[in-house]
Image (cartoon, rainbow over all chains, first blue to last red; front, side, top):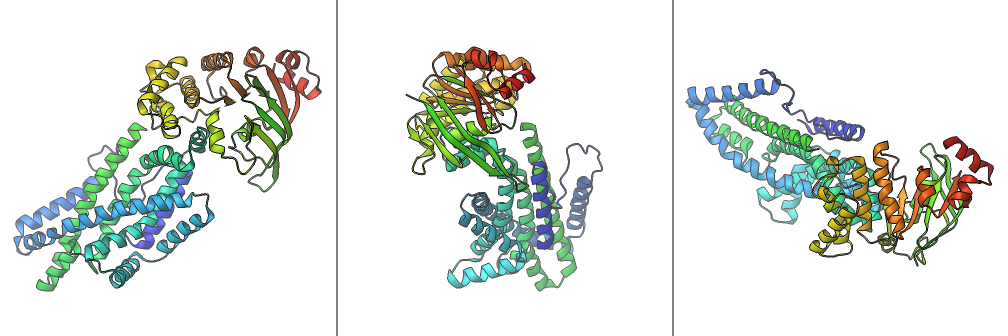
Length: 274
Length: 247
């Protein structure tokens, strides 16, 4: 998904949150729906297709596909490490940004607003390369750390919008009840508002995680030895570009489908508890 | 001696369409220690706004409010200290849905008064017993009926050991069969000598428990008196019309 599509999807998502006070999943990832009991739902079809194709290629065409596969999957831990660390960073930045957006202080308001607008207005790839070089110029950080920081900063803005929408979805009476009991606004946020927000935004965070897992491939252009980079390394050695990219695509697709299934489960559990 | 003195209170705000709304106009009101004062009046008459000014959930635009000797409209006042002394019960209960009934009650004492969790739990269970909900300590708000939720909300306010209690239409969101259980708790509270200021449509409760009834219309206090005076011999025509329309 391109950053522009991503931005559009995010915008729609936030409109929907505001309207229905729930977090909708609109990131274009196929989320299996609970009520869709038919054997042939789109998620299943895609998943079986990708697994079957991957399996067939790897088992029956060991040369070159099994070789490619074994080479490429060594990038999986790198992709996951970058994504998991960056999602934690993005949630931290997003929480601060979301709180800033609803703050009573005009200055803090504007700072978090400008940050969000800035990030949303620049293509992800451009940001990543810029931050990577900026970090490289002023601090000497290794590729992984730079990638994590760059991804955190980029996704922190989107996360901030999710957190803001989550906070605004909490009824006003909650804050009033908390401060009427003598709590400070900070205490009210910490003990009353944010725990409820977390519950609302958890599926959306899961969704961002999937988004980020895919977008982390952009970082391979500069720093990481992730799935995509491993593929490109293989191509540069063998010139099997189409075969390699087929495997790379299937590996990403399989991971993404599995994760979206997990997020769907998570969302289901949340709805049951609500 | 806990009391509330409201003098020449004004509250205006800008409505969404840009018009200036005068919710409260030059309102005067006094609640003495251990008094139970009930504010009645048609909807939109500024009753709730007046009540919400007392703990500064709404910021008054004019006049003064003195609570327990502290001028809360002055900028130097730490409103949080006043809020600890003034409990508030809301129409929509506003219980914290992610916490159990007991945790709802103990949160503020632990975080604001910094008492130990053990002590807070002991006090919380005693309060739940007082409102007749001992067996619901571990229930979440969603598992409680409206009446039970409101009783937990009252217990939650009492946990801060307030000198004054404010009630903003505490029974308006309840099904008829649950109103009594909440009014019973409020009546007990009134009997125990709590200073109370309420907005309610429960005229039966006002007649039985109030020491003073205030009639408000269009943001101003029109008439005040004992329940007998105001309900049986209203002096002002608007009071009479209002009482005729609801009784």
